[in-house]
Amino acid sequence: MSRHDFQIPVSFKHRVCFTRGAFAAGNSLLSEILAEGGGRRVLVAVEESVARAWPELTRRVESYFADLGFDWRGLHVLPGGEAVKVDDLLVRRIWEAIDRGRIDRHSYLIAIGGGAFLDAVGYAAATAHRGVRLVRFPTTTLSQDDSGVGVKCAINGFGKKNWIGAFAVPFAVINDFEFLHSQDEETRRAGLIEAVKVSLVKDGTFFEWIEQQVERLAALEADALEECVERSALLHARHISEGGDAFETGSSRPLDFGHWAAHKLEQLSGFALSHAHAVAVGLALDTLYSARYGLLRECVAERVIDVVAGLRLPLWHPALELRDAAGRRRVHEGLEEFREHLGGELTVLLLREAGVGQDVHVLDEGLVDACLDSLRDRQVASDAAMVSPRG
Ligand SMILES: NC(=O)c1ccc[n+]([C@@H]2O[C@H](COP(=O)([O-])OP(=O)(O)OC[C@H]3O[C@@H](n4cnc5c(N)ncnc54)[C@H](O)[C@@H]3O)[C@@H](O)[C@H]2O)c1
Ligand SMILES: [Zn+2]
Image 1 (cartoon, protein in one colour):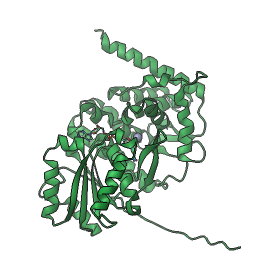
Image 2 (image 1 turned 90 degrees about the vertical axis):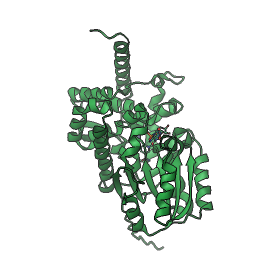
Image 3 (image 1 turned 90 degrees about the horizontal axis):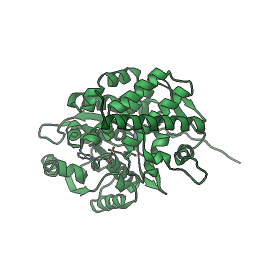
Image 4 (image 1 turned 120 degrees about the vertical axis):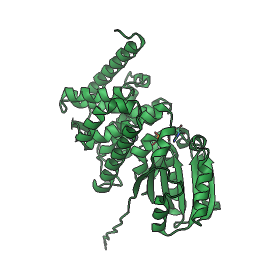
């Protein structure tokens, strides 16, 4: 018998940048970043809705690379949104473009779009030639404040969120604030929930800042929105790079606070409910549960729920009432699916205070149900107040 254990140390540089007008003449950020890698061949994928919102974008991108003398392999305008994660059509189109464009591991694939588009394009990039260099340009609040700086990508499989995917550190992430301002208001506002999430698990001071700024954030005031996005993205990136488990080999996933119910709710709604809205509900649920379980002071839970409501995000969705033949709420199935997705022991992060989490390994189903009932009642009361405001 013989056994040999080798260590294979691998280290990645995670380049996270913030700018405005990345493709404008005189903005050298992107060219400097690409120069670090040395490759000259470039292929671009732009999400349709972004190309529509920025009619000059495709021409600007093309002339940007032409002026710098890059080996231009084309620009593809492709669909995005949650639908592109349901099957592998977009992934295949990207693979084809990579193949036809002779994109190799030293070339660059530049992807410009929302979180769902970047997830699907990222998966194609991570798997073509076992990984070509991807430069992400996230264009939504959520993708700039959270998913864009993530080191993973996925599409759905077997009806489950993000079942097929890979861990892959992008070559660079460029958050161009200009893109934020063309999203519809609801998408722009909803993505802030991931900033609330990361503040609750990582940085109580940031939570207090969000609380103070909630009206300006809800009104989508540009400077508040951009500051919130940047602080959130950096907290996410710091956790990924310094948290000791970038590729999620352990069972604890603080950045997935509120997500066990969110992912199930997205699925139960047939993916009609956006990720951000589902996270709002899931975050409210796990916050309330933290309080009722005795970990978090009730008054802090109330402040969190006020922030969610203040951002005009939902606390409830009718799919939470879907039940199986035995009368059990189907959302509970999300807990086992969450465990399976993570592997190992079920680990759910709850809150001890704003900015401090605590892992637990069991959730009491009856208590979850009581919290859900309470969120439903709050939503009903707030909807009624909206319909007939009293003076
Ligand atoms: N990989 C990760 O680490 C990670 C982390 C969190 C979330 N996610 C995933 O991110 C996805 C959600 O991303 P999202 O919230 O960006 O939603 P999204 O990608 O569905 O975009 C929302 C909508 O905005 C449109 N859009 C995008 N940018 C625009 C712009 N600048 N102007 C106008 N319209 C624009 C899109 O076409 C879409 O209709 C989910 O699938 C979620 O699972 C991934
Ligand atoms: Zn999320």
